[in-house]
Image (cartoon, rainbow, N blue to C red; front, top):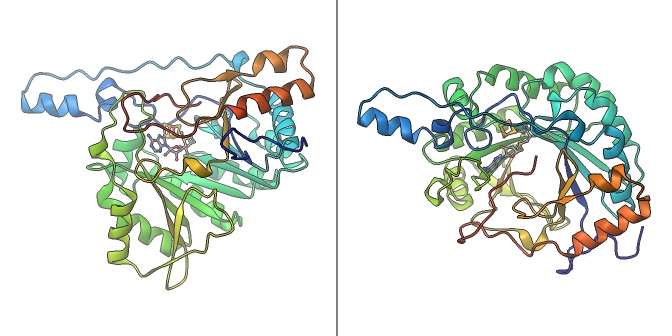
Length: 351
Ligand code: SAM
Ligand code: SF4
């Protein structure tokens, strides 16, 4: 490893790499890949039309997925992660799109788990396909998994994800617990007027099933540009609601300042809740993350305006040292922080 590793000009050292392995998804979350133009505007247009009754035709959104040959191969991902590990990256999270849509994910996990220096390998999934792959993922070296589940009500789940998949996601969570994945995390994005009435029920579910639940503030990442400040339920408000209902004790996080969630355990034992508040309480000052898109572009911030294409290096004749030097140079220019709520903010998601 080079002495400085991946240090940026603000003194932050990169330890965490999020690797997207596909841009495709089997869900159509309103805030991420909405199914229709109307869903992209959270059905506001439909409601307007209901007030002013005229027939409403829902307008499907066509996504142009990246051609397969543009996606990094598992060998290319392995090489890049090995180079990053040589520069001090310790944590890898496999994500997407929906990562379990890509074939042979266990094969990739075996490669990543074997890389010297990678001490934490995790995955974020919508959970729909998890149960059927769980044993193979576990055998391949996956130990930690985060499920995304914004609602426990089948009707609301469908409204938010565009799919009837709650039973499958719940089965995936149960299977992860049974196979000993630890911790099993559940992420819930909270959006005012959509699922904020479920905050207490989601927390009770975490307590009952011994899960680490993370409430996430709604961020302006939606391609439909529906995000409005008013739809964000602040971490502070979420915590107030939780405290009114549950006896919570703070978890000691002094050993890990880069952790994005503020965490509380239930005083009576099982499970915990955490709050990730990037909008109202940005944690950019401690950010140690990098992101790699499925087609090999490095993003130094979730809200980066610029992406840096590493594929020409990976597919050209660059040596590992050349690629390492490129990573060091790109990280040096990592943004100081995001600009959510300020006039110009990129709202493109890294996939
Ligand atoms: N498909 C997988 C899943 O849903 O878990 C992995 C990719 S998904 C983009 C990763 C996470 O980003 C999910 O937990 C999702 O809820 C979260 N996310 C997506 N759009 C968001 C937004 N606008 N604000 C906050 N979180 C968001
Ligand atoms: Fe798919 Fe995850 Fe985006 Fe939902 S949040 S549409 S599950 S990628």
